[in-house]
Image (cartoon, rainbow, N blue to C red; front, side):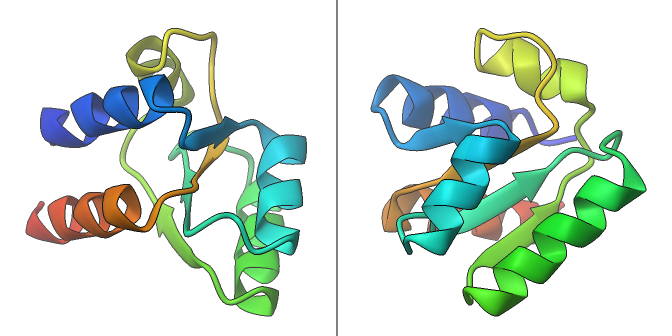
Length: 102
């Protein structure tokens, strides 16, 4: 795992550029605010399929991360997080780059 991604997510959260949870993520994807959707490895198959469909429909990037819901939650100061969106182009681009490096 790449701790740089978790650190970057924490910075993005403090900057107000992250939406956490299913409802907030879907809303941001539908209105075009979300640049990247990140789904936890331990999310349900139904959630993964739903988010993949929504991202295809609204032309947003999606990453099925290697992080568990607990790891994402801890890094963002919350409980378990299965899905989140990054709502800033710069953060989204860097997270995508770091994911490719893994």
